[in-house]
Image (cartoon, rainbow, N blue to C red; front, side):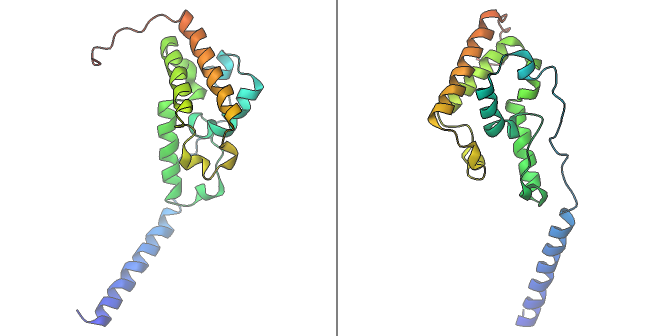
Length: 170
């Protein structure tokens, strides 16, 4: 293949990529935005101190609730798809807006897991805190949130009927 054909092919590929990038800018996932607070929201079911609520708002709710604060770059594709996937996965794992839809024993277990993940430095995710500097928690904030998770978990576990055994887990 001579140089002119290679140049022509490269030019066509680049133009094709540019067209694709432009077209995908018009395809956006449904935003994770809900102004109403569900009756199953953790704040409707349990006492959440203001100090804890502030931490949840700044470090957890974008991925773990039904209301995400979107940054400017969320309007650019394919970033919006990546963010949507991240939010969907976060909500699948834990959704504070729908927390009460879980059986009590599972609520207790999930809160205990939250405390453990925070203690191990797994939450909030590094990929989130790199961009959202306000979500970086101080040691005191981490301790406050972990203590609240553990305390609420114990309170719920004390009144929760046990979960039926799962035959798939061994």
